[in-house]
Length: 378
Image 1 (cartoon, rainbow, N blue to C red):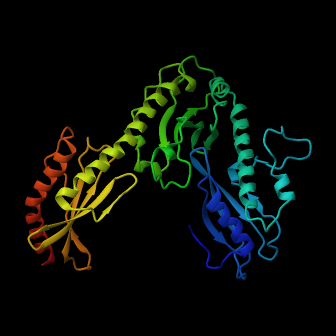
Image 2: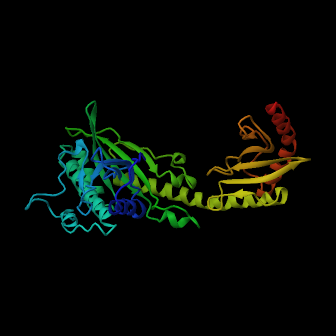
Image 3: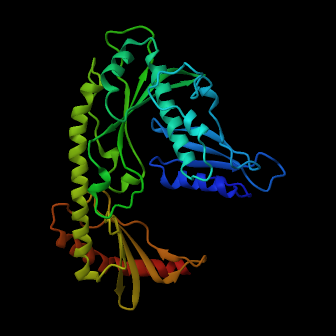
């Protein structure tokens, strides 16, 4: 986030801070600046607002000299036809107009900006759905008629000067609360996995249209539990629509997510199995059990062993890194070994045998690591 040197006035700052802290959407601030070159206070900022697995940029324009007034919102140039405040008599009344939020603006209520942004985003979603529905594409009209009743779907038009027009659907998957699947979960926002489906816009109906581009997308936070890159998407059969594609995908995805949750317990048992050989870990990831550090010694040479466990453990063996507690490089940093994966391992071993075999490996490897540290320090 690019912050201006000057601070926001307190009333404006409280509005922005409330939005960033309490919004169920991961809204970001791109930049903050002042509308007056000689002002000591900033009074405007750019928000990055999640929409359809991307971000839209809106400028929020306050007036530092009149902080009690409601802000203006400036939308992106490509949305020049987006008019969220319809002229009297216009609008279908499908979503609440932000007009009332602006008319009843209360600058001392820190939640008002968040309410306004969410209302504007709801109107923007309806605007994008209407644009897609007006396209002269029979296939897209059919997809919309069969899928948009599904809760949480977002759809928008992708266009550019040098590429053909496309329509992107963001479809939330799995009717389960992922945040509640993991004990002690630190996630602030509700985690979801989406299917991104991108259709080319065809002006003429084709009996055998090409398959859309499909991709699983999730937040970066959920990757501590589960990587969508490990999921093999089912093929999109000719003539298939999203309503036919989703059930098979969701069945496979649900099984893999539940397997990923169960694997936390397997990783936890592995970390516990290290205790008889190394003692209690110096540090460990208590939630996802993806990392652990133990203290080891070979004679008078003491060093740390860092364990990195993937979501595919035990199919994938832990990556080990050794860190000397007695040797430092020219920058004063502890000397570390390269990542170690070339050691005996089988995912079919008992957990206790995995820990024992790693301990045996490190008895020999510690001699090589000590020699490596001495040579590196010269």
